[in-house]
Length: 177
Image (cartoon, rainbow, N blue to C red):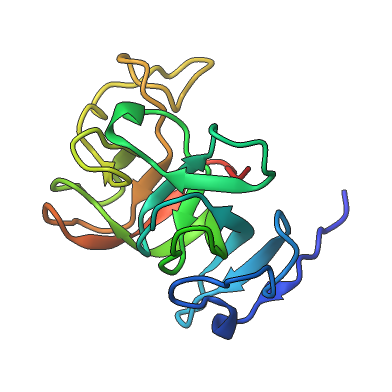
């Protein structure tokens, strides 16, 4: 099996607020992004639906449109569901920007205290936030990332984190739209 090479996202392409037009890349493209500490993630170029998503918040596919590669901020009703990714910079309404879909993410908001290497799901108390709540028991058979309550584990915390703080995480699996 050979290696797959991805073009690299330049740090200058992570524009706060997003691009008014698709100037950063072709929507849907997947590229590699390297953090200043040497960690890597895969990032996808997407279009934000109506509404803004802040850096470090989760997005889900936008089911209100047929526009390809369109996402929206995850809502509280989507607790425990899969995600499309995590915004690498703030993306304003109807703008283009980058989301992390696999690998290391340097700064993500967590809604409650999380142990180092703790499992994380999409939370239900705050829109777009990850939580370790309901992540204590998991199947160990054919579905190792699904909890007894049916929630999908999307990431793991890298460090011990206090409630309402930002932390680095490792995405479990590969997401995207």
